[in-house]
Length: 390
Image (cartoon, rainbow, N blue to C red; front, side, top):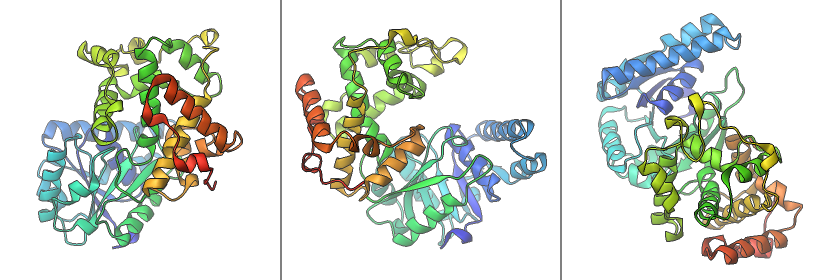
């Protein structure tokens, strides 16, 4: 199988991620079978696709006929086998429940043609475990889009322990085919199936750092976010938590506590907010207030003069060196590419920190680790040795 042989896509799950993936595939001229467990879910996903396409056409970003043609390429299904019977490529976008994903892949393996590649859009879960539910583990991999799909360029192409190079290359090239009116999609290869892959793994120590600072009362979220935004970041870390959903952050922290270190265990302030139903943007209240779903008001004059934004960069670089040591990628430049295209940064953490000097980056990580008593922040041997090619 090569990328040009992929003509029909089965998208499993018509929710936020699924309908976005279906839309971007349809815009690339592919036929899309959009499946969900209830007709109402399928209909809602189809409606959101049409609304999105119509919106782009009304703004002049997309020709009206092209929008209509893309919408016509998407067919709805509530029969999983029916959605898969002529698929060349499946992208599963179901909830992050391992048993559910394994069941979907088990059924997909039985229903899809033998040549079909089966991909999961999971943001964290083991591709290897998912592949184990099939008799074609060489054709199973991760294809991790970011939300919202129509705006985010980054896609992680993730190798499980049994994924073949043919599957990886075909999938990488397939993502390149999805470029559209808003520009190219940017695939990044993840060569080893490790928690968080690249982008979310680099965010893990930042989430831990912010959670611990807030837990100890060492920062005020608005002041810290104002400081981070003062150097050009579109959002501060606490607003990002709210935007993503505190429930999602809590589950992610719990997952990293199980798979990386118990130090990632969710902090009490986050548990309390989630227990109250204050999840962030989607509920109108989280760390901040989101009136009418609009962004919180962050006062620039409140920027925390005592917070060093380079702490964030140093921790990202240190985590990136762990990915290099683990073989998740062999390239610091590839990590920077993921950060730039996944988070809107102008420059990646390695490129930014290089001028600071690797020794100083290591010293700053060690200082943070000792100040908070969190061993995960200690610099790696790779960072201390400065053995980084960028």
